[in-house]
Length: 111
Image 1 (cartoon, rainbow, N blue to C red):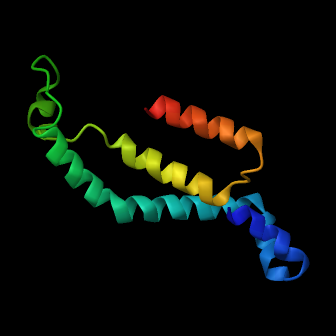
Image 2 (cartoon, rainbow, N blue to C red):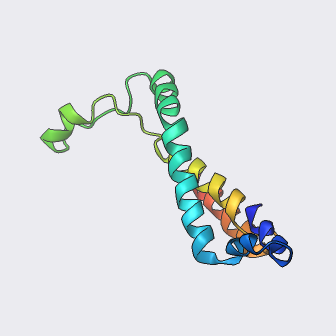
């Protein structure tokens, strides 16, 4: 969505920065970071309530996992995926078919 602000660069030079892939990449990284920092604690709390005791720990695994991995929610990838999808939708060129293809594949593999 913000990619299309680059088209306003013809009237205001400050909007030309949205045409540069490096600026959009940095913006996407910062957006995903803030999204995860903002919504992450609430998602973790919700996952703890939903999953109860967390993932069962195998007895034949490393001894360090018996104590440290106990009660860990197992769907933390949901935070990463939601941050990535949000920043892709905000900063990429949505008129490009490859963006939609990669977005669909990313969500499909994350599901």
